[in-house]
Image (cartoon, rainbow, N blue to C red; front, side, top):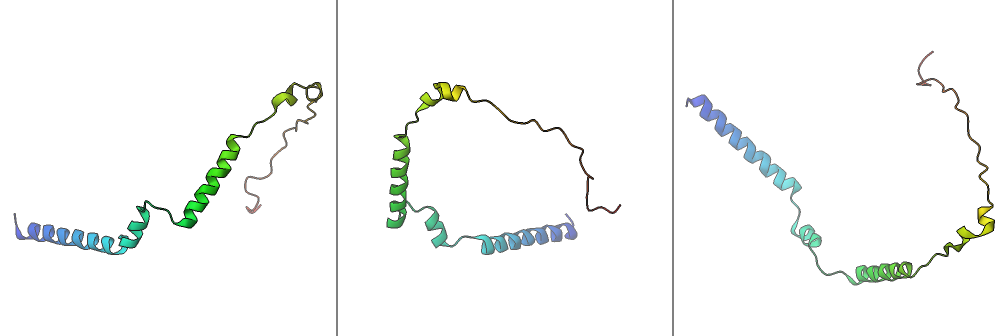
Length: 99
């Protein structure tokens, strides 16, 4: 290997180390942030919210719907009175373009 090749390899390695060091410095999470991400116990406020959510979810499990209305003669006598809209011509593709 000649001197230019060795010089280029050393410059590339140093440059990669500088880039890695900069990335680690700016994007590394602090230990407090990392600890918050792996925390296993909830604070009392969080556990109260979780208990309230689970209680609300339990009330939804007990919810029943009366579907007998769909079999009633009054429901079956309902008519669909929707109106079909005719297709209309569209305007210009770009209304703000100059004429």
